[in-house]
Image (cartoon, rainbow, N blue to C red; front, side, top):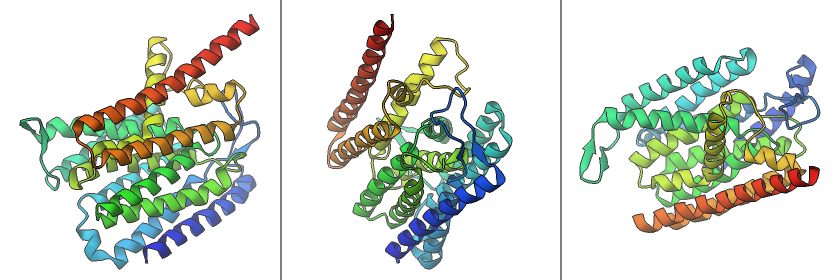
Length: 344
């Protein structure tokens, strides 16, 4: 049944994205290149809609067919529902271009309310010898979820990157949750991976369609809420749920602080992410995306090593991944400096 639902998710997504490409050209729903764009031709931008629809239908089918198991997965249905709500917000943003402040407030309040609602269903959060009251962990957790949601949107800027990340990460999470016997979380990630793969068929460089805010908001919300809820309700460590996104987290966080220091409007579209600067150095989208996905695979291997390890080893693995990605960032900076010297 699970494999059938995954196959359906992949097929519906691939077929839906194929149809979306033709429909978008017909009705004019395309991204027109500008000075901040990484593409040169007008490209449809609603590919996230069939992706999300395929994953939601497949997961809904599993909930219907395996109702007993679904009821035992604390927080999973609410996590998926939260991602769907954020998808709707992103879809509306694609159509109406909402203000960043309004979008953030809706995201934060939604995450906060859901986490407060789920707090009594989840185990207590302990910090060394102290048990944290709900308000103490729910608020920072809501900020974390919203940050994960938005950084996924920020990183959806070149062909194949966001779709490739979700394909690799969710495939990895499927194996992890299956190893721990968490069938619901495993199935949810499997159908998301399959739907992402169906989208990636059309988004791999050179892309024929983009995900749009609707698709990236769904994925970012799902992974952000999963990293909180599943870390508390299952034996899977938090580090394992976060390490596959290390490149996204570090790139976006570094870029944000860099823009704040320069007193730039951090919430406006720009081309200063490391992956964008790599394309500015002359690398193709395919090469940059391949490098980024190689980093994702390496991060997944580090996350796998975290599973049987104690706190000290987990910290060492996290630091090693951070150091490796930082070295890559320094390499890009060095190439930029060398190019500036040549041009002078």
